[in-house]
Amino acid sequence: MSNILAAKERTDSKHSNLRNLRESGEIPAIVYGNKNDSTAISVNNIELQKTIKEIGRNGIISLDLEGKSYKVMLSDYQKDPLKNSIYHADFLIVDMSAQLQAQVRINLVGVCKGVKDGGVLQQSLHEVTVTAKPNDIPDSIDVDVTELQVGDTIYISDIQTNKQVTIGHDGEEVVASVLAPRQEEEISTGEQQDGGIPENEEGRETKASPES
Image (cartoon, rainbow, N blue to C red; front, side, top):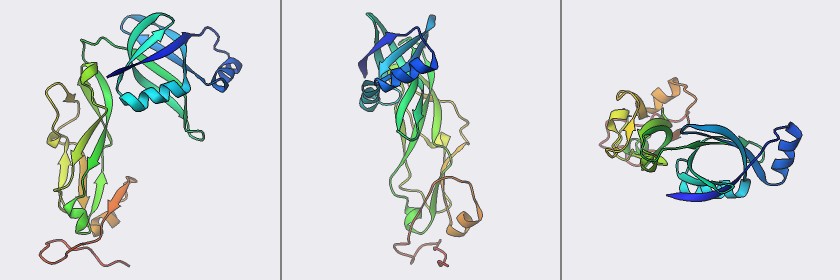
């Protein structure tokens, strides 16, 4: 899926002019790749964010640069944490017939059986590097964790993708696991974790530890 995004070439990169550009609703950007020289451009802030929302982070954009059209991907961008808006973007010109690498986020879906038993779901890997043709690169990869029990782990090798997409990680790399409550208290990883309250302790091998 692709959207058309208008762009203008810019020749002045002075700090004051970049500030004026952003204040007018435009974003300074760079377009490069596929044997083309790097070119400084600007795009409309609202239109760029609208495009990302419609086609996803890894979608193909038809960049219209003053009459010249390029198939591009958003290779990188910087956001203002206070305004939650993009203030610079990099666009990569792609060959639609050639494979390339991209970062794809991992979404954990479902409610773990282990979490219902009081375990804690820990996601160790939030993004993976994939190789595929531009139109085959997914915006995200969903990983179903519904059947995970306390002590279970999902590895890269457990992720199912179509033949057009290759994940460039070791198969033994951990994606997510369900820790026992006491184990979770002893391990401090800084990762976001989701806890659960046991629904039915009877007949379960692992029980939640009493709350202090």
